[in-house]
Amino acid sequence: MLLQTVTPITVLGTTLLFALFLSVTAHLAARNVLGDVDPRRALYVGPLPAVIGVVGGAFAVSEALLVPAALLVDGAMFAWSYDQPRRVVVGMTVIHAVITTLLTIVLFGITALLATMPG
Image (cartoon, rainbow, N blue to C red; front, side, top):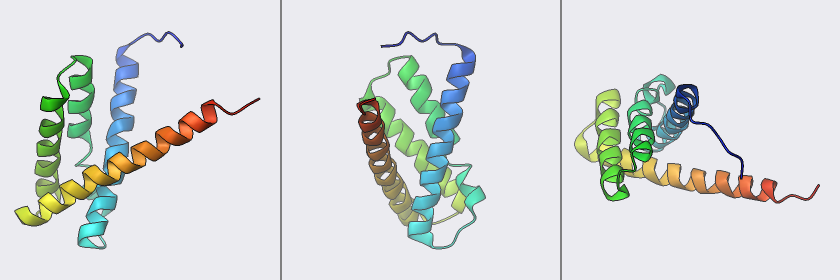
């Protein structure tokens, strides 16, 4: 295992990449529920849940607190960004969580396969 030094730049980079990933999956969820939507609106959804995830992970906050907090903030950002009724926002939030989980599993699986590739 490689030793890595945690610096403010690495934390910022991780947070920005995670926010971009969450914004892309938020756009996929919004398109799934609402149809054709402006992709710039999804950029408002990703950053706060990403910050919650990175800061919570850094301070070893329990997942039992971290996941509901991130989902609540995610839903609040969907409501603020897309201005939809609560029922639609709940659907977008659930779909966002599912898409993010599935895409993460696929990406980590690809990474694991590439890491074990001979040569």
